[in-house]
Image (cartoon, rainbow, N blue to C red; front, side, top):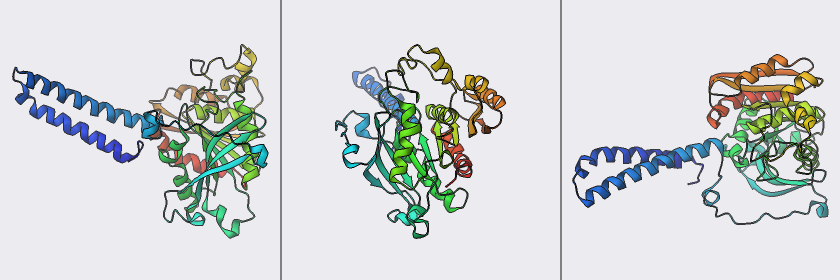
Length: 369
């Protein structure tokens, strides 16, 4: 059973409940003043606490996607990355693996679609990054052989794992179901984390004398994907969805580069990049660059971009609620803004799962094939 599977989490919860009940039941019997009784009490308390912490840790990992596997958790993944020379082959995208979408007849792409694990080369940004790409069933059907598809980049928070977008948030399964029900158009999803220069949190900024993350996402990624798959290169063909850090990045890409992305959805995103130990110096002392990456500042001092934006938050449980309302009030034409405000919800996968179907339907209605 995998680290992120529901079975492991339920097993840990069950073990914690059982050990707690056993501790209560056996405590009177272990009340004697003997070495054996003392060790028994200590053992029962330690076992109960360990299972409790394990259950909490597994839940937190499942909610935020810190580790993708047991080997990842215990630092046993020692295999080094392989440098792919895309210039030698003339390809900017290399497929390195394939997996099934968890729907009926998963082994038939024209019925279930397909997920490919890819490496994306960024010649302009000098960044290469792994990603997963979901291709809908229609992509493999003869009647769509000459059709281009809309695409949406899907980003995690920081640090996040791209696998969590597939296993934790079920993006491919949701997109498959909604398209089958005619609630959204068939859309290609490019799933990855915004941390393309790990372990640094670049906040999707072109850092002076550092990683050119913004260039990678707004130029290299789109051109690379369009060179390999049937996707257009116009902004109207492309959207971007992100949660937390990914949400901030999504809004910024659309607002700063309306020629790259026509629509952006931010799930619990914030509006100004933090500056801490994980980011380092993002702006190199350039105050103007810092302002231009502050989305609230942009709304007041820069022309509105002809893009569509979706913001999500919760009245209780989300720190970005008041800022989200201020953002919405500050938007003017030609920018179009929509929102999804829950009565309560935290900064976690459970909240984002409640928002995803609506987000995907919204995005599907904004993109052109």
